[in-house]
Length: 146
Image 1 (tube, one colour):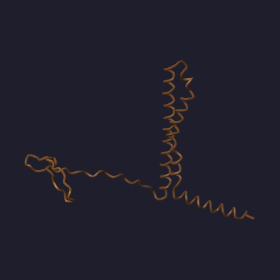
Image 2 (cartoon, rainbow, N blue to C red):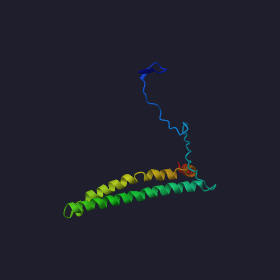
Image 3 (tube, rainbow, N blue to C red):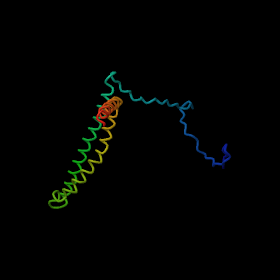
Image 4 (cartoon, rainbow, N blue to C red):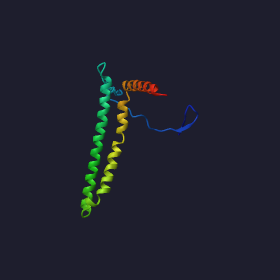
């Protein structure tokens, strides 16, 4: 059996109906969904907002760097142990490839640190300070021009 849609297409009719649960009195069960709590906004003192935001960004990049060091050291230890088990003097023989892989993994994790630092330093106050310093430097250089 087919049924015609408002656009004129025909679609097969199915015997499936939406699954509605009824309680003992044949009334539908109504589920009330609670709204999820939104994140609370960070609150700052008037003059300290910029410093606290910069601090949060700097600790994030420091944490990322610590994770990168941990990733590199743990990779080296695992590979060194595997080399030592597989062949005689394996840890010494495979030192260069093992340390190279460890450095690669550490740099992969640490590659976002410069971006994190740039984001931390790219604040309204720091941009104003930079413009002021550049203006001052250009005035000084103009005096020295022949």
